[in-house]
Amino acid sequence: MRLRALTQLARKRQLDYGRGAEIWGMVDAQATARITDVQFAGTLIGHELCVYPTNIVVELQGQQVIRVARESQPGSCWDKLIIAREQQHAAINGAAMTEAAAAIRDRLATVSQSAVDRSFAAMREELTQEISLVADQQLAATLDQGKVRHAAIEGRRPVYDVVHGCLR
Image 1: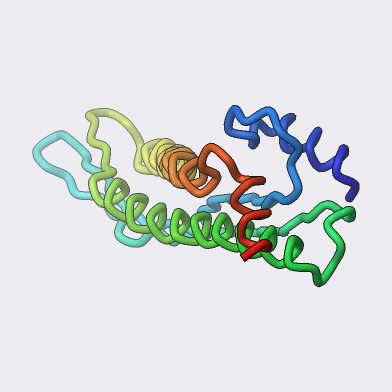
Image 2: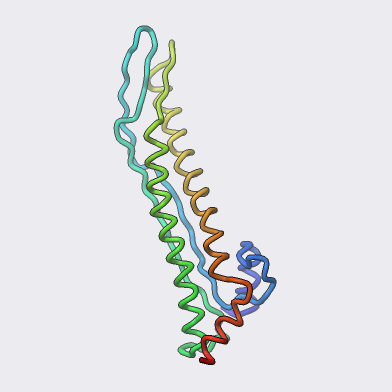
C-alpha cells in the first residue's frame, strides 16, 4: 500500500492520534465476540422462576495485519523500525483481547433473570441476547481503553524517533 493511501486509511479509521503527519505503518485489527454455546437451568422459588446460565462459551476472534508503506524501502533500518513499532501496537491489541476475555467472564458471572408468569424459553432467549450484548460491549470497551496505550507508543515525534533510531 502506498504512503498516501495508508495515511488516508489510518485517518479514516481515526488512527493518527492527532499527529496530522503521514502514516508509514499501521496495524489493521479486527476483533469479534461470538456466543457459541449457552446452557441454562431454572429454579422455582415460590411462584417466581429464576433462570440462569450454567455454561457459557464465548469465542473471541482477533485478526491483525501490519501494513507498511511501500516507500519504506523493505529491509532498511527505517523499515525495520516501522515494523517494530507496529509489532508493539499488535502486542497491545493482543493484551487487550486477553483483558477482554477476563472482563467478559467477570461480567457474565452475574447474568440471571427472574420473573413470575414467564416461560423458561422466553427468559432463556432474553438472557442469550443479553450475554451477546455484554460480550460485545465489554470487548469494545477494552479495545477502546487500549487507545491510550497506542497513543503512548506514538509519542509526540514518531517520525523523529524512527529517524533518530536509524542514525545511531
